[in-house]
Every structure is written in C-alpha cells, then in structure tokens.
Length: 348
Image (cartoon, rainbow, N blue to C red; front, side):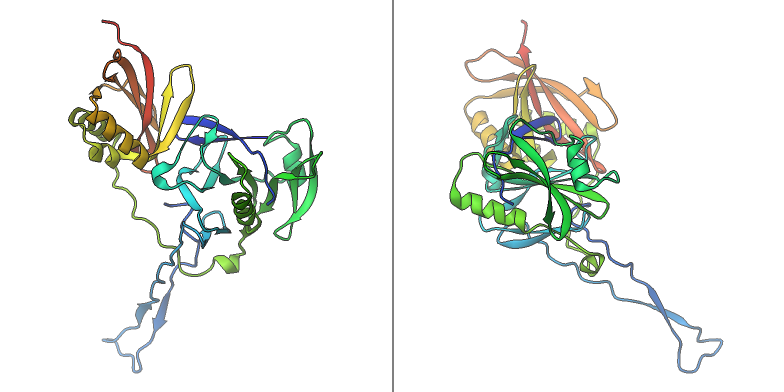
C-alpha cells in the first residue's frame, strides 16, 4: 500500500510495510468567555449595572515529544507519543486538495530528519484526515481512496469503540491500515518502517493503538498553548531574503524565512527533503567549501495566489554552474522559502 503526502512543493510517496495498530492542530475548541452582569447592592442612577468578564482560562501545554500525551484540538483526537518519538512539523501538512490533513510522528531528531520521494529515512506513524463523505468506514475504504494491492483484503473491525475498517494482508492476517470514523471525518492510521526492528515496531504499534477521538466534553476546557504566529511577510520579502542569504552565505538569514523542512528536487527527476536545521548545517558546510550561489530576486519566474518562484545560478566548486529555481509558498497568512529545484547547466 502506498501513502502520498506533500512537503509543500514536493509530492512524496512511501510504502507502509507493516502495522499492528499553529492554528488547526493546537487549538482546542472551548466555550467563549461570557460576560456576567453583576448588580451593585444599592443601584442608583449614578451606579448602573456593571459587567464583569469571566477570567480567560490559561493555555494548557501540549507536548510534542514522547513520552507524552499529544492532542490535536482542531481535529479532535489524541495519541500517546512513545519515548524516542516526536511529532514532525516537517512532515505534517495543513491542507491539500488530495490530502486535507496529514500528521506525522517520527523517530528522527529534528537535526537528522530527511528523506526522498520514496519516503522518510526514519520510521514514522501517520494520521491522515479526510471528509467522511457520509460513508461508513468500510464503504469509504472500499471506494479506493487509499488504494489496495493483490494479496490484501478489506474488513470491518472495531477501533476506539467505533465501527471501523482495516486493510489486512491475506497471507499473514496482519493489518496494514485502519480507517476510523469520528467527528464527521475519516481518520486513516498507517505506519511506515524503513528497517524492521522489534523495539521500534512495538512503540509504533503502541502509538497507533492509543489513537482516540475526543468527545465534546473531553475537548472542553482551556485552549492549548500555541506558538506565536510568524510575522506576515510577502513573497517579495522572502525572495529578497533568499538572495541576501545566498549572496552573503548567511544561513541565519535563510533559516529566518524557511519552512520547517526544505525540498530539493531535480527537473524531470526525483527529489528529497530535510528539516531546515539539517539543510542549514549542510549549506553552511558547502559555503565553507566554496559553494557560490547568485539569486535574481525579481521578477518572479512564476507567481500564483500561493506560490512563487525565482531563478538563480548554483556553482559547486569544481563543477559546472547550473540553473536553479527557488520555490516560495504561502502557508496561512505568510510566505516561506520552500526549497529549490536544480535545472540544466548554464550555457555560456
């Protein structure tokens, strides 16, 4: 079975080999504070009723590194993150026409999180959320929304106390994906493992088995603490920062406008991704070894409502110069550097 996800500009695909079980994802819906009218003991014309607002609840912490209980307040579910695992900001999407929501948990550290178009280099567990479309779990699964293959079957099951469905390997009876309905959505739970290791497998299964769709009562209460949103900036601001960062060989400037991970593709070929800290570390070493990059910050070579691109020339020491396209995307209210795509050699 194949799962598809996006890290902004690069569509990535990986195979789930086995499974035994800033806005949207961190804000839990809670009743809005209401004003309570309090009358004075002896009301007079000079002493009208006064409104005393209820105190705002204090935000709750929501850890993203295990061992911990992690709650996605926007979509209304909770999982237990095992020790050695964490929620990946790099591999979590906020919304896409094909994948409305895709949340990833990984064994990789932020500094070493990377992968290619065949998938992450580390073990992961993914939770994908889509519209239930009024279907039961088995109907939704049978509609082909996540695909299937020879040697697999769909079957009904119970998961989190709900009428769910799963994909099972016929020869072994091993489940490789679960589909669980709840809150008007369908949640798809999958596991991707690069190298089979029993200890890692046990932790991944425990994470999946801990999945729980929250009730309204469980969601009530103070909101979760959230990271302050990035200052809104334009695509032009990001383009200028990319040009300055590469000209000055300043990874601090580049990191300041980069998304949590950056993609690196090749025209008409494959691609890869890595967390921004990993990419900045690699670029810093490349600059020290003689990498030179010139960037044309304007005009854009491509510009749409949520995407823009600028051109440049990338010269590794001892190699021919090549053209390069830097991609810029809009996520929420602001723009970010998303990655770059290598083009053909420069014609002199």
